[in-house]
Image (cartoon, rainbow, N blue to C red; front, side, top):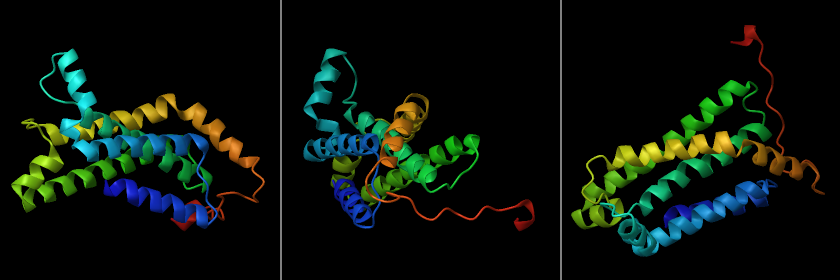
Length: 190
């Protein structure tokens, strides 16, 4: 559950420095935290709701961890997109999706490396933390779920996310969450 506490502390620090995420981003962050807390409570491979789905659809494994990895792509995509837009990091629209999805895949890869490191530490930690459930392709499936989540964020949440960010503009705080814009570079600066 460490990512939940790290995320909570990160949001608290951002708020203290004058940054406020949009309501959509905050709701998604909250949902992701719930998914992680439930998974941490039972271990993702043993979450009862996942077992119910497994039994109802006669699946070979508990897929609750896939929900966690889907959220691991979706939520960071919204967070990263919001940071990029509000700080004017990327000016061209086509590059936005590529860069945000790349960041999400990097986050997913780092998490899989942390899982691998836990597996190297001990067999018990490996089974509890990894929860591969005898799936040799678990790591690749997890990263694919993160990719799907990031793509869903861009395809289906772009309009509501824009509206949610626009609502921040009417906030009583002066330039809420806005940092000084980055200098524009010309061709000769490269």
